[in-house]
Length: 544
Image (tube, rainbow, N blue to C red; front, side):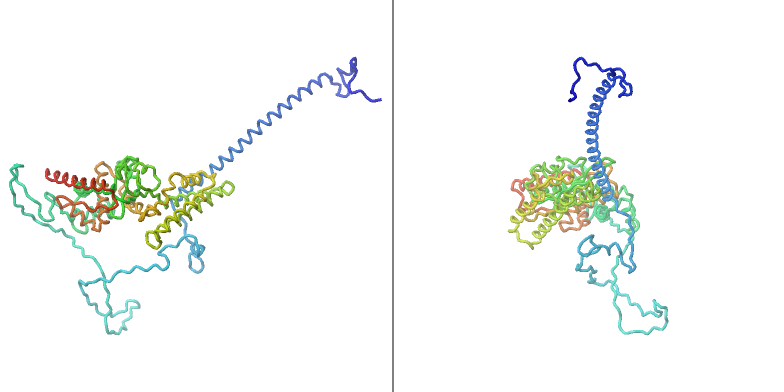
């Protein structure tokens, strides 16, 4: 007989209040506890699910923070290494060689110091004239072993030695002026003699030499004073050297403005900027120039307005810069982005990636940066071959097409490492057309090394004299470096040019010729500007 699944309706359990199978516990109480435990169990399951979701989100956040922390540490380490070189001693092996260089493979690695293999050596040219001949008798004692057993030999050995002549004395000239009376000024007047600066106790040669030592050699005012005192016997205080600079800056202001106009009308300009300090406040040193001209301007701002004041708001030539956005306001006819800056950026990103642990490192970003460096190096090599003439210019359009296609393939996939992704996006963005301008315009360099090398003097000068202290100092340090470097590029010695600048009543522009590539309206504007500058300068000199 089968057991029924449910008890009959009138069934009453005799153990309701005390069941021997439940340790004499009430069945009603046990059933209530069971039902309450089931609700608690489901509540615990819900809490576990919520905590598991929170734990998963926290683990993801920790992983992201650890990755970000590793990237920041790598960025900080790379920045520190760029500023400070490692202080490591070189260890020599048993053979006396350098183990650091010995570990470098022959087909790669860091380049050894010195000139490349096969580079011709540098030797001093033999003097073309002899000012003095001194005959030296044969020695009686050997200078090596101190032996007295010496036998005279026939013939002589010639030795040419080139030296300088120091004349520690000043050269004083007395000028006797014959006066004339001016009825218009109602006073007697005199004219300056040859190589004379009226009412100046120090002559133009000394002043031009002092300016040359500061703005070409990079010496401080006190060192210039010491050089003149110790070598030439000419005494003056450092404040006098400041006056020399101010006088030359006033004389050269017209030429400086003429340089500005010529920069605006040039067919090709390199531009760059760097930091500067004036009276403890941050300023910027701007540069614009080419192989013939050099223009510096120290300004408080690093904005588009400054770039427009130097290059104009409608520059009609090719502008070679880094990718700084301030130059966009010049509306240049063509732009060439410096490929060297992009290669440096890719190398810096690679160094940062290599400092990250393998688990958090973006392998695709490392491979991308390496390929970009190789690609840009090849592009620079092609640009130098075009400039040297070893590569025909007719091949440039086909090369540009190949480069564009190759760059698109390299930048096809997105990267997870943010700096590398920013670089990738910039290479295929709207500024991609600025990468290969050197393949469309003859004479354009693929890098901005010309501007980097030109502004290097101010960078070193900034470390020596720690900036300027006044607005007049900003003006002086803008004008004189521009004139000195432009004079050198025009084939004139800076000191001789400065002497001429100090002695002439009306200085002539350094470069009268206007480049043929300049637009006609700019050529006319430039000629009018030259006439205006010369007239204004003549009026100023007449009032003086």
